[in-house]
Length: 347
Image (cartoon, rainbow, N blue to C red):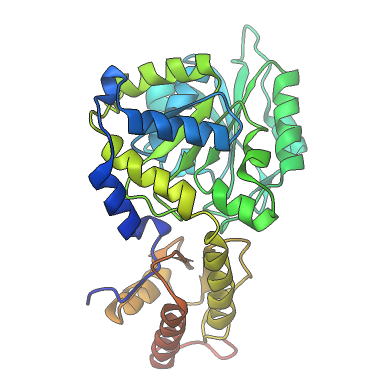
C-alpha cells in the first residue's frame, strides 16, 4: 500500500514550490572550478548563520562528517564518538576506511555527553598508544530519540579538547531542531565547535545536501577531500538554490514538528503494546512488546511509514509533509492494529 503518512524519517520531505522556483532561476556555474555563484552564496550564508569563517557544500551529512574527520586526523589517531553515534552506526565504517582512525566510544546520558566519560576514554600519545586528536558529538542525537545537548555542555567539550590540543567536531545534522528546542540561535550552538556538518535535507526540506563549516584553512583542505571522494558537483547551484530557500523559509516552522512529535508520543503511549517518552524534538522512539518489525510491517500495510530501531523499538519522525490529520491517522491505525494483535496480560 502507498504510504499515506510517511513517518520513516524527515529525509522523505519533498521540495517546496519555492524551491522549484528557486531552481528554475538560479544563476549557475561549475562549482568544481569554483564559479557557481549560487553554491558560493549558500556556503557563505550558512557559515555566517553558524558563526564560522567558511562553508563547503557537500552531497550528504555523511560526507561532511567524514571529510571533517579526514582533515582533522592522521591515520592511526584516536577519535572519540558517543557509543550510539551516527558517525559510527550509519556511515559505512568510514572512520576506519577513509580517515584511518581508531574509533573509541564514550557513554552518554541518553545522548547528552559528559566530560567525565570523555576523560575516561582519552588517550595520550606514547610509544604504545595513539593520541586522541578529535572528539565528536551529535546534536540532536538520532539513536537517542532526538536528544538535545545544550551550549554549556558543548562549550565544556570544546574547552577540554583545546586543553588537550585536540579538535571538537559536531555532527549537527539536526542542529536546527536543537536550537529551536533550546530557544537559542543555531550560532550559539555551532560556535562551540571547530567544525560542524549541518543537513539541509531533513527538517528544512531541501532535496539534497549538507554544509560543512569551519575556518578558512580547514575548508580549503576539506574541499580537496570532497574532490578526492567524488563529491565535487558541477552545476550544483540547482541544489544549493533549494538550500537557500531551506535556511531562509523553513527554520522557524520546525517548532510545529516538535509539537506534532509530542502529540504523537502521547497518543501512541495509549496504544496497547506501545510505550513512549515525550520527545525533545521531532523523533519519537516507541518501545514495543512484540517485535518491532511486526509493528512496522503492519503499519505499512495500513499506509503508515515507520522504521524498526532495534528488536523492540520503532522510530517515527515528524516533518512538514505530515500535518495534524496525519498524526491522528497514524494513531488510529496503531489502535486498529493493536486490537488485532495478541499481548500478554498487563500489556
